[in-house]
Length: 358
Image 1 (spheres, rainbow, N blue to C red):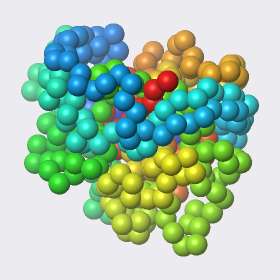
Image 2 (cartoon, rainbow, N blue to C red):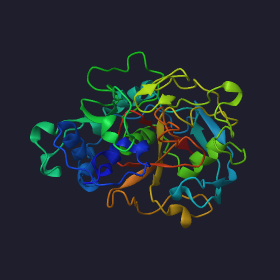
Image 3 (spheres, rainbow, N blue to C red):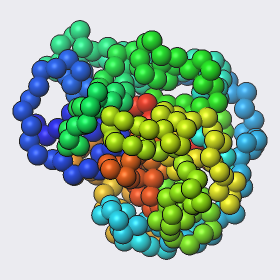
């Protein structure tokens, strides 16, 4: 089997390294469990999300506290650095409100308390959806970055990602971890469907890919990074990304080895924080590798179908901005115009979101 078929869907932001060569199958429990989470048909996995949330929203539908008004306009979208972000094309978006930072643990906890919502990573798995997987491996959990002890080749993501039973938004790295003291950090281990449920409860929605990039550019000309052409202008780190030798030695020159509290880095000219690095952010658009070749120029909403040649038949949505694991040695997806992708019901500990509203 191809190695990316095992865990690509839940590793999300690191899927763009070109390693498609065949690997020998492994019987490791972590990979078997991970395969279970990745390869189930989306239609079946969606059955796990059929429980209706209870309770009513205490958030007013017209509330815009903590949001920034983005006036809208035209801009050049995409980058020539990656095939799925080509061609660079002009797009127009209408005005919208956007959360000034990613949704935090405290904000997501308020949603869960109000609705009794249970995230995908916390839900039980149905053996019928995972034929061939031992029953003892079918336990709720999610993908967790687990750096190796030493330097490794960068063609095998098994060496730094593993499926951890009990990992979820309350326990981002597994049962022994906690978000106590991390209330102002972005919530992680969130699937697209989890993010969408929160947004609906809050009277908001997830941003389109075009809205997200327009907000990140903030009226500036196209540059290598959203903040300019220099990685460290005046010696200052502008985003929470990975420094050092990936994946085993994060030197934390920017001050963080994992998520950073929201607003830890400079805001952009629109008053928005952390649109680069920290955590990947879900967009509402379905992911299609060739979408930019036929994209609409006026308020594009994404393609009608999803397509990823690396995993045919798996529904995916767009992610943007990169994360604290993006490195110039491996995944450089914090660069302007680049795209991420992830299976609709998958999550991991470097993936979150923010919301918008009309």
